[in-house]
Image (cartoon, rainbow, N blue to C red; front, side, top):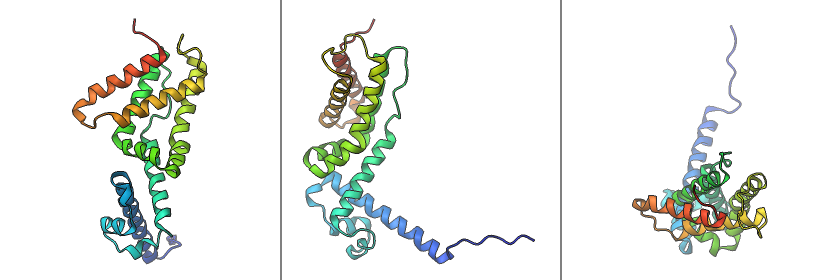
Length: 205
């Protein structure tokens, strides 16, 4: 009879590891929420209270409040990235493909990241994280697409990368300044579409 293979870790260790990961996730979620809603009053005490643990326990996972804030912000950015479209669809009309991509990006940012965009404008360290993790990949994706499918007459004086950066900046601006009322969802989508059309200088028909 074959002998069952035992885990390299005792059951108690596996349980402790699982509980540790759950605690770490709670800490990160609490830190991200405070950073998003009230960054000026971020503290380990507030994080601990929100996560339902003691402040001392946080040091079992993070060496300092600065490290916790950095990890929480990066985790939030990664969760936004996961919501973004992986690439621009190769539709028959480049204008339509770019508008669809812009709308999908704007919706992802609005649903999870508008406050992080505001924070990115205020905090130099986070701005660097945001640029590296989210903004530059979006610009590269758009620029790469424009190299092969640039709409005719779209700001001829702009390079592909400049045009891509302008599009991303426009998307960010709408997301940051738009009312969060979900009842205005259609108006939000129309605003994104109208701005992209204006940048690309394209028309239906």
